[in-house]
Image 1 (cartoon, rainbow, N blue to C red):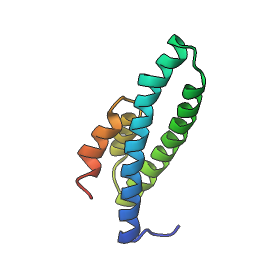
Image 2: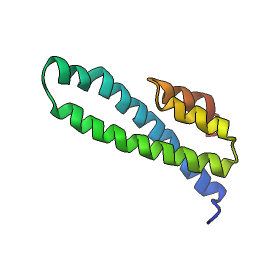
Image 3: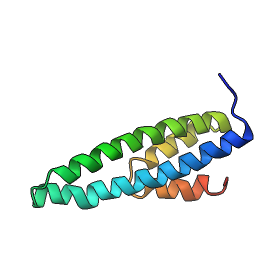
Length: 104
């Protein structure tokens, strides 16, 4: 396994922070906009598109969180907090502010 340099680790941090923000936005769009459109207006397509985007961003978020925690030698507890943040509305914004913005 290749060890990440400081430069690459800062790049991973930037990618992680961006992914956290986009994942949080997609989560809010999914539940706040496209699901009401699906169930109240019968519009299925927006939910499908945003749902796929959110799913991809969720997977990327979890993988990058795992890599980042591994490289920073963070505890499993911190990874679990970051993972749980991805399951809660506004959770990734909290994780970014509490853990990630301090490292930037």
